[in-house]
Image (tube, rainbow, N blue to C red; front, top):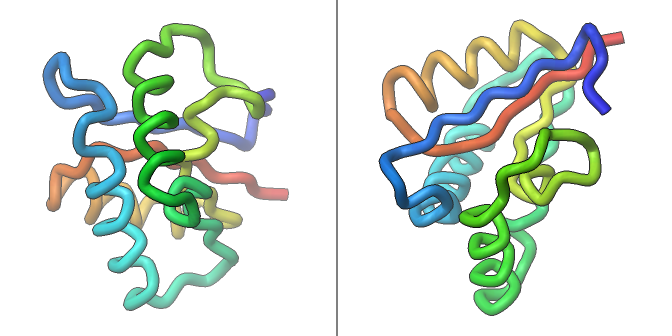
Length: 109
């Protein structure tokens, strides 16, 4: 469920939705580990999966057309930021500069 204080960003490249998301998620996670943030950052669960699980998850994402909510398959690929400022910093670098295909959202109290 998305609330007023949550925002979702997706950046799809062409018709191959999901094709580079695992690699892009790992690149973005590496950047997050080197970058200081004010709040907590939760990395995508797909990064803890084995290759078979990642492939299955990416196939589901490729065919996914429903609305985003907490039970969406995209949640497995989503970077979650506690602070909106950290989310903005991440999106500016990862989406705008590096042009990576990722899911991200923030939750602020």
